[in-house]
Image 1: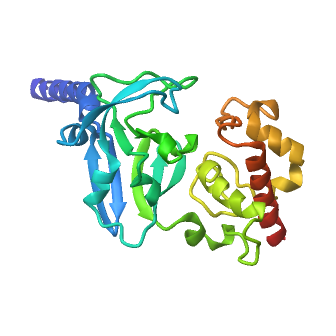
Image 2: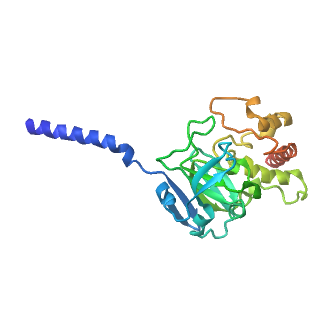
Length: 276
């Protein structure tokens, strides 16, 4: 009896110790990079220890809306260690279902894409109106005006970066008809939608975002929204409908002009007419 009690007591003590160590033993967040069939994972410690890690200050961070300073590594250098093959886009997947499609030319261009890394010992502040920070990994731009870079191209809570084909090549059904005139607004609407809307919404199942509803299936958005309603939704979603889990941002005129919104609506109408 005594030996059994002793073993039981030791087992209980071991369980208690394991429970207390569980947070420390939990898997450390890692950023996955995939290109050309090769995948590499980087922890925060891995990235912060890199010789090309640097402190960068952004005059106005798109997600925080104010100046921010980060310890970061250049994304171009991370991608240089992998072979992207014929891919022309970097797909940035976040833990909340947001999936941004970033042209490789933009990532490698003068706008300077960096991966900001949150140091667990010095966490970043919470995002405005959210209970979390932008960490542990956040794609930021040192000179966004040189892109230009849209607000939706600053994905935070990053989990994975993958070299892929452009959206129109991956999902031909969302490309406008080849017969469309070069200056047709729907053509520009396609590019605007890919940048600003595709990160959250799908089109008849095409796309990777899971934050918002599909805008073509089961019924096209242009069938249940008037043009005035769609314009109001893009300008200020809360003015049209609200719910506790609402995440859709406002698109002010600096992000999307009235003409831009008209082009997006023209694109949605074009796809809706083609899928009837």
